[in-house]
Length: 329
Image (tube, rainbow, N blue to C red; front, side, top):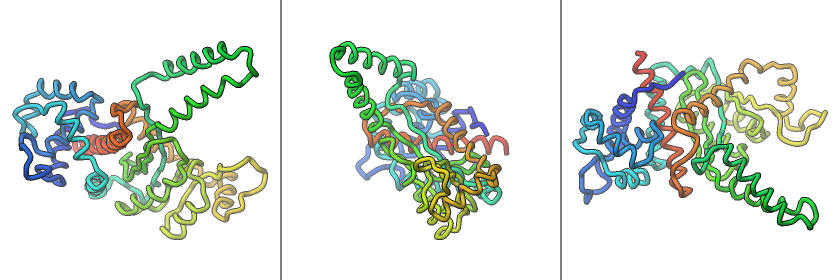
């Protein structure tokens, strides 16, 4: 399912969503030039286009009809929009907006989680705007420089500087984990962090968030989420069928020791869950949609604002899907 390519519809939908959940002003001493729903709509438009704060300000100035749709007579200053991101996008606000968006899709009977599974996956965003080719060339130059400086030393010693640089990059890498309704590509739950750590601890949190918003019969995830504890929580505590390949640990010809991991290994060996597990690709499709439509690099520079930007991208994706469904209907 592709998202709607009408930015005006996305702007108006974001304004309606913000009007239902956000107060008009942050406090009683606000200047009251703009309301919080209006600023939220401008921020969603910025993410939809993948623009900087200055460029979205120029876009709004050149689109007076768009401003009139959300009750504005002038475009907000880029500095105002920068401050609004820190004020508007919080975990509490994010959760309430996700609740409302999921309810809209559930009311329209578009989730279909009884027929298709919930898909969980994660992805990393680039911390800076630079291509993969440029990144490879930089690493190659580091290797060559270190090799030239250490020709007389033992081989392999120069690789320490490359590994240290790589560790710093991985430690600062923004990571987004999502739970997706595989039928309609709607994101039901999301978790953001800084650092490319293991996926396994995020499984239960994403599943619990999703169950708080919709009924889930089955959940699929890749081997990065493989854990006996995750299977036990999903199947025995939450009554959700979990399908995760037993891929963690050293390769062995013996079956895994855990009950549910051994059960999964045997079922995957005879391809019993091939059709259901194939729906996991829908979560990868959602990651591709977000990066293709909104960009693969973040524009924020601090860890906290990068987390907020990833949360706003999730909301923008869901709002664009909502606009696409309204346009069809």
